[in-house]
Image (cartoon, rainbow, N blue to C red):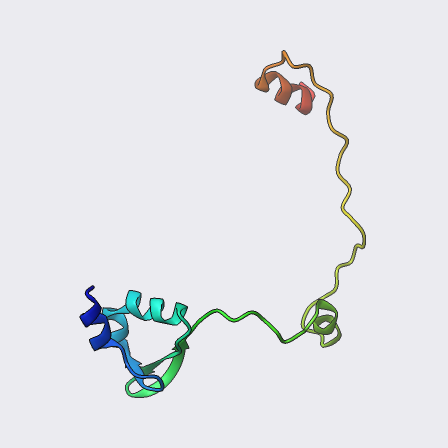
Length: 105
């Protein structure tokens, strides 16, 4: 898409983009959103969504806050998970022999 085409389809800040325009120029609009613009998407002239840059979550909500509000259940186990001891295997064994050994065949 040429630079002139991108400028022509670019709505001004605060203007809305309809579904047809969104569909026809989605890559250009996503690039603009990545540069920090907010694009309002409208259906039948009414704003329903916005396209904009990713913003880090600065709400400060922790897992403990969510658990206290009843939105999640805290883990039932605490600490690190336990892992099985590694197997001691000779270097000259094939993979299918190793699998058979693990399976007890």
